[in-house]
Length: 189
Image (tube, rainbow, N blue to C red; front, top):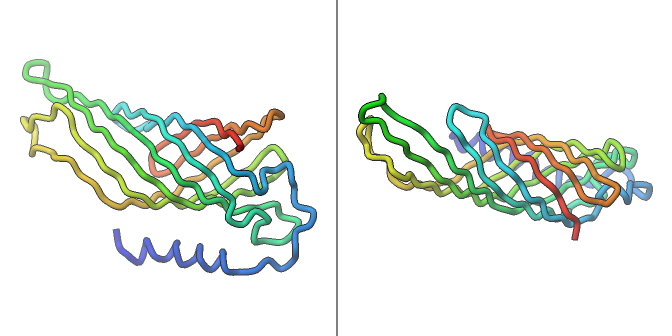
């Protein structure tokens, strides 16, 4: 990945965070989640060619609870920190000499979500995550290509999501980003 492609979204986000809203937001939804810290627990699915599934969590902390746009737009910026574990299973080869192997990955993630509350119960958001991933292979013997070792590195992902707040103030969440589908429940604390 070109460094410029990674630095441009970060620079744009820092400009948005430093900009002051044109008008104070005295009438912002209090029931929309503004200023609420929450814990989301995820089920993670990869609808790709291999069977990928896992679990994860995010802790969301408001960094601009009154938003950065006009007072009539109910937006907020939220910092999300967490981790995902994803397991992929694959089968290589023909019936004779075939074998199963798997890939396991841990993704430590930090990102910023920009929640737009359309109603006090419904929000849509784009999100940019940066993180560190560490992965390892199990039972890969190299018969069908080079032997794969454990690996790690920096990654960036863009995601979009939806939050639906139940009357009990528990959030149902759906997020799609960089090939992974996350389904979860958010609990305020």
